[in-house]
Image (cartoon, rainbow, N blue to C red; front, side, top):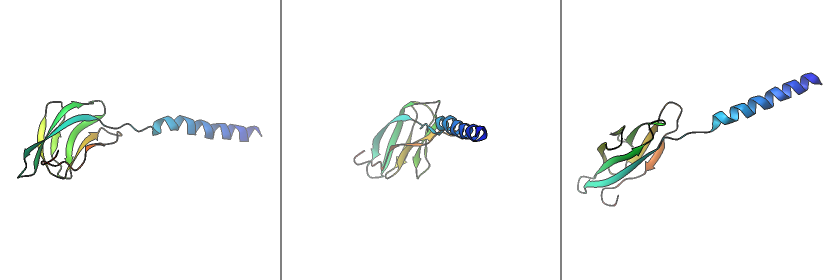
Length: 105
């Protein structure tokens, strides 16, 4: 009876302690998207703020263009891309804007 109680306590303790590890952090940044030239389908993405503790960089996907790693940096990204904050190590990526479009960003 004592052995069952000890095993049950160990299983419950393990579950409770690991539960806190399952809380997922997300990368985060603030960006502005502006049309560069509607005829070429390019957008200027500028980083306004970035959480350096959780975010390694901001990118455009699927093109792969890196916008930057610090506030104030910017880059051109094609229409139809998503702007994504890329998480560090075990931090989840966060989509900031989807399907950007130079004509109606």
